[in-house]
Length: 443
Ligand SMILES: C#C[C@@H]1N[C@@H](C)[C@@H](O)[C@H]1O
Image (cartoon, rainbow, N blue to C red; front, side):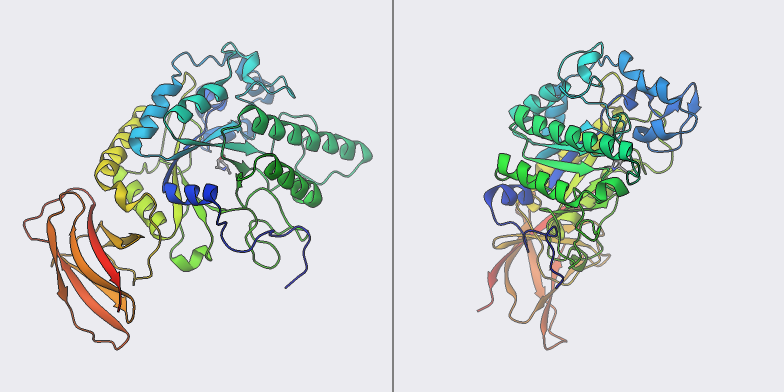
């Protein structure tokens, strides 16, 4: 392997309690909230086709007009407790909140810039209200932080060339460090950082600085969880270093995307962060294109857990602090489903069984959960177990514990056994449903 100073500092999954707790969450909530929510994807009546939180980069958007929006930011409908209660009902075990997106606006009263919530009509520390409310609901809080900062004077995307640019970028680096140390100091219950906006060449070049900063943050907060998107190795490699080893504690590459199979996750922890519309994170008042249903989202959730990942669903509150009706409806529908079926999610992981077309397998201890999305016409759930693998003992519906017959379907292959779990023909369900298969290790 290639000798690296600034590649992965750990091979394989973290085994400490904090990471194990993260791994067991299954379902998280992302919240993108900032001054872009005031614009809501429009400017002077014109529709912005891009992601709403990127509207400042739209050529039709005058930069000074955007940079003065904060003077109107007064989310009088904002109720952090209501947000946290809704997330609790949905079944989210953690929440990632945008402390600062690419526009540089801080929802906490940072000492290092005036471009913060403190200088808005709202004045109060939004981040504090959100962190406290989620802490009270027992939902772990993670802080999203964008290295890109279009507002901060020293920020630049390209590698600094002139002496002046180099000095300015060094100041930007210190500003970035100062804000991160400030966040970890002032919001000590935050369990980790979700970095974004780290694709600029100027930042990728900061190999030593970023590695030192990551070490400093981890030293400040033992157990801190940081994903793969924060820094690059000395060859400019991101997420995976020049030896193909994962940097950080989990892979952050699945943005609006999902692995196709367990092979795609390379034995790493990972999260999938997902939007409800096709590509809107911040509030856009006019969603166009496909809007995912709770069926789609529950499928993605179970699929993620079946491949050892967490599924993080994004919400984009509007400029007054309201969670929009479409998101409220989905939070309720997902919560209704989780109330019955969360045992197939929380603390569950991948199980090495042949993938089937009817749905997904998740496992916890001596139970395998079969979550059915595509009910076979013959009501037979195929199950194929490699020789010497687990041994089926009994099966039943998770919802009401009613028994499910396990029929031996022979062993047309020497190296595996086939079974069918029989769904009673009179069992009706308009929702994805879960059958529990209790197993024993093959004797
Ligand atoms: C591109 C990009 C950003 N990464 C997502 C998590 C959103 O924050 C989006 O703006």
